Amino acid sequence: MASFTERVLILCKTYPSPSAKYAETSCVAGMTEAGKLIRLYPVPFRLVSDDQQFKKWQWITARFEKARDDHRPESHRVFVDTIACDSDPLPAGKHGWPHRAELLAKLPLYSDFSQIEKRRADGGATLALLKPARIIGLDIKMAESPTWTDEEKDKLLRLQQQGELFDEVEVKPPRIPEPVRSRGWGIVSHGTQPAGCGPTTHGAAGGCSGAASPRSFA
Image (tube, rainbow, N blue to C red):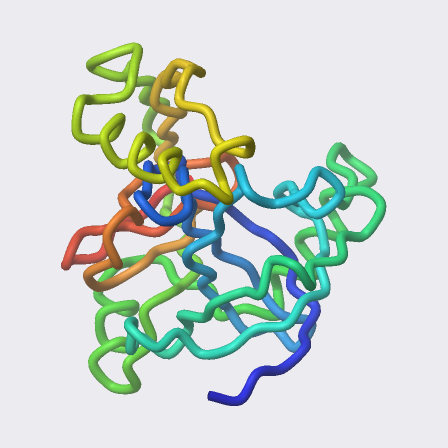
């Protein structure tokens, strides 16, 4: 499958999920310079060198290819060894947000799920930018367990037993609490995710949802 090089602005990352092949993986949503949404999965942050680990609102340049096991049009695989990050994320605050908003203005903006669902039904799109009429609350949910589950630990241990990665992967760090879920701006994702790409929320733009119906995260 043909690959291509592209600049992508990172908008959100999901909570990491253990993988027997990649350690913890995340699903990432971003936008290209041309204003197209793109989904990146899997992104094995633990196995990515420090200078290639990107943050939200940071531009990266990398080589990508269309995902082979995910037929949604926005889904792509990133060649992590090709990632080159801009020096800093785009600034926030009263001076930085106008530029961020200018970039987001390249994306179609939706105000309700019915519009997004029609777009999916008509053209197959599974990522969208949603702005609800009002923000009604901020939900903070702690993880049910402060550590990985037995199943999650088993995945990490199986990876650790692969000799070439033994020195690179540890399973000691505890699981951190689930991130904040705010009901406001968000990236909406449709469809079934590959294993490990579950619902989560991360700040100004939401993550990939594993639900079959649309969900908005911020």
